[in-house]
Length: 107
Image 1 (tube, helix red, strand yellow):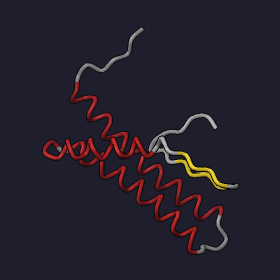
Image 2 (tube, helix red, strand yellow):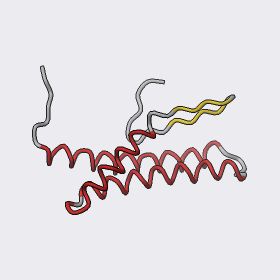
Image 3 (cartoon, one colour):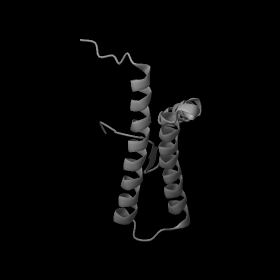
């Protein structure tokens, strides 16, 4: 069984909505983590959370640009940058950086 979306407009719209929903879910998750797991916010922790909020806001913006007909190319470039950032995994000591815009499965 092959699942393929043949309509390019539909594919572009799905990617745009995926970026927007993924960014919103990411911001909500980051806010929940910030309030649940932190007793005191220090400088490095605040910097990490601001970076996370920036990435998720960037995801929302790229999805928004994809859905605009006259700025679609720029949105697709931003989306490709975000997809590239999701490949990177950095682990040092007990801290790990992973960025997922959308849904993460597995461990």
